[in-house]
Image 1: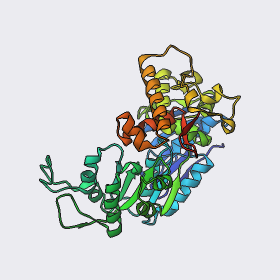
Image 2: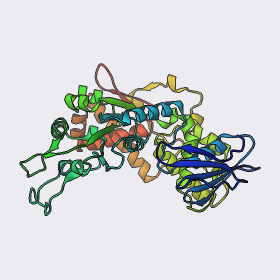
Image 3: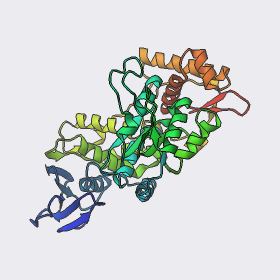
Image 4: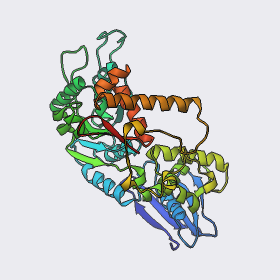
Length: 422
């Protein structure tokens, strides 16, 4: 990278980035973010103000130096992407943002579905209107309808005052329905009617209320499979799936990792003063990890690293601490494509590091074995499995999702029953 002097970059109508050589004193345009670039012997980032960052880079632009420079040029609300897959998704999202068609985003938990949703909203004509995110899995089923559609005063016990609900609160803007696969079937029918008629009927009311809302739905499971298995309405699926977008797991987006990690360092660093840079040795470790928790896990690792670095100018490999050892390092001799299918009765979930099991790990082991055995006995039927275990189907889904994040994949056999793959 050569020194840049007085170049102003447009930022999708969100302001300007003024990039200049640190030795120059050319005044920037009003309200522009200023990025000063200079060569040096050591990579560094220093915040000089809320909209002023100085980046010193080495002659050879390493992964860490490039990530530092690009993140310095990005605003706090800008998407961070460097992998071709992610760049293609954001480019597509940019194109569909101008329309009002519903969007369905699918991807594993923690991959950034809400970030992509906010990106679509921020690039749309509705950008100055509300964006409301609702996690359908985080609310009790008995309250989800009231929270979405609103209610009249006295409509039910505890309704001491009327509430407009999330759909009406997002009027004119965008509503993200995250984890929509967890919505009960009965409520799916009411949502479908609201989307078709563009109106809602609050609980306890008899007169519908017109609304103008763009719906963005997100799910961590294949909704077409949920439809086939009777857990999601087909008509609602087609109503939401007008334009599908997909996000890959972080381990399949290696070129995003350095950029995301440096952006997280900047997010959790002081507003004024030096910002640690990530050394190439640390980036290599991050890229070698398989990230079962995706971007959320990466943020946890970065926050730990900042604590361990304790004000050091850079984050090194010795500051990187994972929840467990990187799977690629442990199982390098057995590629993912040739993973063995392990019969259910032989599955043993052992810690990667053979340390003495604590009480919590013993409990998790017993719970996992009980779920697998019940699934086998019930032929893979989740409803019967949940009934046998004495838990709700939603709770069973949470447990199965946790098992998937731990690396245990459960698949149905064509002949009935289940099999596990790790």
